[in-house]
Image 1 (cartoon, rainbow, N blue to C red):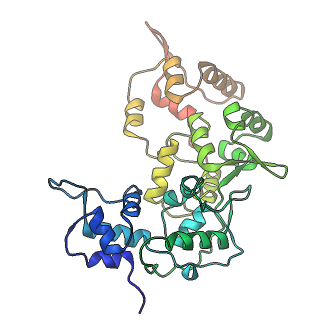
Image 2 (image 1 turned 90 degrees about the vertical axis):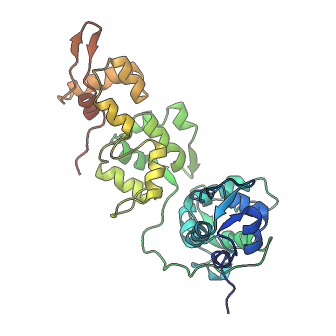
Length: 329
């Protein structure tokens, strides 16, 4: 008979409100491990009431552990072959853990006596090494539980963790020469690494920077190419609606398809000066002037300011449609 999962052990706990020590006793984990789990995304909020120590709802913690497979990993139960090259996203998928949790492992255990396996220049890991490492981590404290049955192997293409110049072209809609200039920006150039003769950038660092610099829209629809690249990187599904986790990741990067409350308020607000627009979009005043000039030279529609006692001002909604145009496709 297989050993119970940690969630199943918690189901048998005598109280509906559990302290860290209670959870550790019920599951066989160390208290330090339970405290670490309590810092993971989505961990239940503390149980209501006047408690001298932190207490959590038993059912909510059991559900979290069940959903995240917070149990001892048996490497033999994990799918795939030892020679597979896997990304952090694929490791999360194969082990049933949150990607956010897995993405922190390389840095969290960097200085450990048993560090997380090393990635190759493209950000992929040897699956056999990862399984062995997970197995060693699992055997250190408390009895081993049983992982949930592994999900069927995905037929979707491998998810990437690196961005190439070709992908930057697709994301920004710029040509090769324009992207060459873009990636020479100090803040972008500093992130680049080389794989042979190919320059690549870490997706989780470059994407928020592109949003911050205004090369990707803060809200509204993404173009077909932008959606395709983000799907390849694992931040959007290929066809279905994005998950809550994907929406949260994109929001952290600076994108909200519907626009934040602040953004919608901004669009309904009064006319703005070019200086105010530059500050809001996080660019220089000259960047706005040059973009308007380029659009005029190309015969494209541009926002026209109105003259006020305080100088020229732009309608924020009209300007936003110009700055973040909904791309076709």
